[in-house]
Amino acid sequence: MQLAFHMGALCTDEDQLVRSLRKNHDRLAGEGIIVPAPGRYRPILGETLRNLQGADAPPEMQQTLLDAITDHDAPRRIVLSSETFLGATNAVFGNGLIYPRAARKTPLFARLFPEADCAFFLGIRNPAAFLPAVRARVGAETYEGMMQGTDPMQLRWSDLVARLREANPGIPLTVWCDEDTPLIWPEVMQAVAGLEADAPPLTGEHDRLHGLMRPEGEKRLKAYLDANPPVTAGQRQRIVAAFLDKFAHEDELEVELDLPGWSEEHVTALSEAYEADCAVIAGTEGVTFLG
Image (spheres, rainbow, N blue to C red):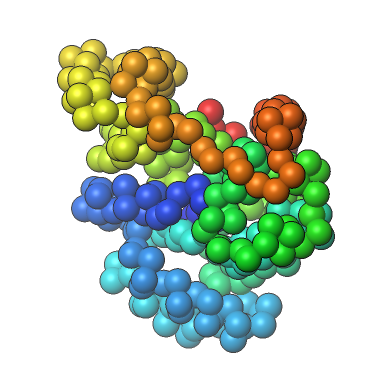
């Protein structure tokens, strides 16, 4: 059995991946790929991990957990998603790190089904937009309280990736940039579901375009793709990018960057560091970088 853990990050998905994949329930289930509703597993996963206290789940507990997650008798792959797999929403920053507890928390997931093959999936986001979004999400009373003494200029997703790889050396990690998801959403869906790149398209492959593009643009994009099916993912991405450029809601693409002491220079520096950081991640052994 395979277990695919989608780990967020916070403010990158809002459960859209689960909703999109579940639109394909019958097709995926027919291939043994189960995408359970989050309410079915999130509470019991947390309770089970607490009860295990770092030990492997015994067979009877594994069966109980499996029965709670799915009605499928012999699933080939189960997709589990939560923006708190890496850490609580109020503990995203600390000790100069993004998700400082991730290395301690994530190895526990493989303990749930010790014989299963695990894979981790992570969407990351430009810190210049990520920090304001997290503050708005968690309702931090103060910026300083949210950051826990962490210098935003020193935050690197590649550090988180390195810690995840060190703590989980046998578990492959797939990473993508949240900014790219409107263009690469079909590839993200296929990767998390465990489908081959040449598999037939999944329903919901344009879900991340909703709200970004005017309805006229979405309609014309669909018509164009139906009439001119792209041969490669890169070709489809270029087509979608062209339509976004012409039909995007400009206000939806803008992000409020108002944080204490920030200037345009801070935003530019963070964005440039993020681009360099993505290159580091893309070159990390054991990591598949989608983009």
